[in-house]
Length: 305
Image (cartoon, rainbow, N blue to C red; front, top):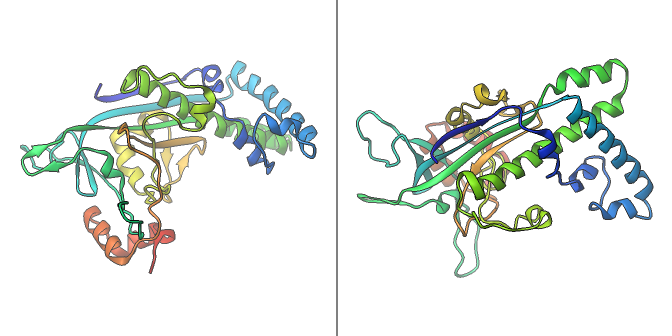
């Protein structure tokens, strides 16, 4: 199970079956959920036309291979050491020979909680290391894109002054990237990791995330630090395996891309780190070997001082 697995030129037709169309309409500033929005008294006619145009273009994307879908996933023995997650080649924080652990750094909440509730971090969903005892667990990681080839096609539309089609293609590529992420996560749960082999839930329940495990992404509420993508990209060799690159601002290119971590713990759930104080930032910077000023820059929205 451990190690990386690469997917090149994955079936767009298979991916398209997992599209959640509600966010597609939101990207066009149409509030509502699919398919109800198609019957909306105010927006129904416009939404129906937009949906037909999307379906027509999606067929061309698939049949004419406008886009290519690539991905890489990986699974590794892991153990938590306080607020950090240590991976192989050495799952223990103790050095063995010249091996060093690969470390994902997480941030713990500092909000005031009701009695009986604790401030959590992502590391809480991985078995801990205590003294000489290793609670060896597993952590997964992934990076997917459905944007390979999009620039060429967008340039063609823009050359013809067809901004509508250019925007439509970008919106569909983003939806396909999210659908690819959902599709692969389902295969991870039932096949590649296999911790939920007997899972049997509906597409609606999948959209509602009624399954075991989470896939948080660096830069989002549970881990607001985008620089953790560097560790993820190195671990999965993302650029070589998928064609996705990172910009200096830690944005992924092509933009129709998603990356993150897989947690299988039955109690794992999404949460927001929220506001943190300077002592938390100082500790985090020390663990990452970075300056406080740098971490304050990346965690600006979470600073509570």
